[in-house]
Amino acid sequence: MNMKKINVPLEVVCHCRLCDRKIPLVVDFNDYNLFIAGTIKVQNAFPYLLPAERELFLTETCGECWNEIFKEFEDGSDY
Image (cartoon, rainbow, N blue to C red; front, side, top):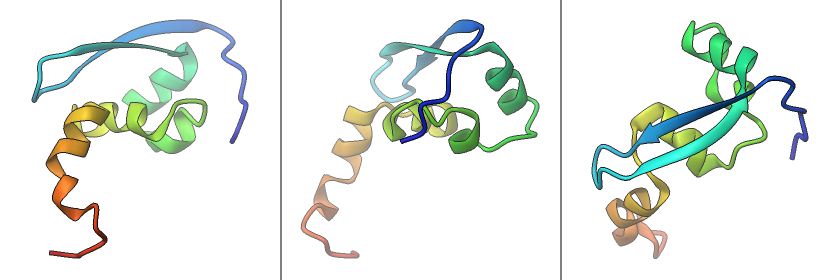
């Protein structure tokens, strides 16, 4: 895991569009600006966040809702 240092902390409150939960995340201010501008991909902007936390930025879906949506595929089946 990349242990990139957060130089200028910024709290971003992400909102899950399915359960309406609000999840605060602390990211680096410069990383956030690069991501919002579209100049860097989420995994490169925030390597210090968990994959489920980065998913919030992309789909506005929290980890719990994501798992609920895809629980039928947990057995490894494709469809």
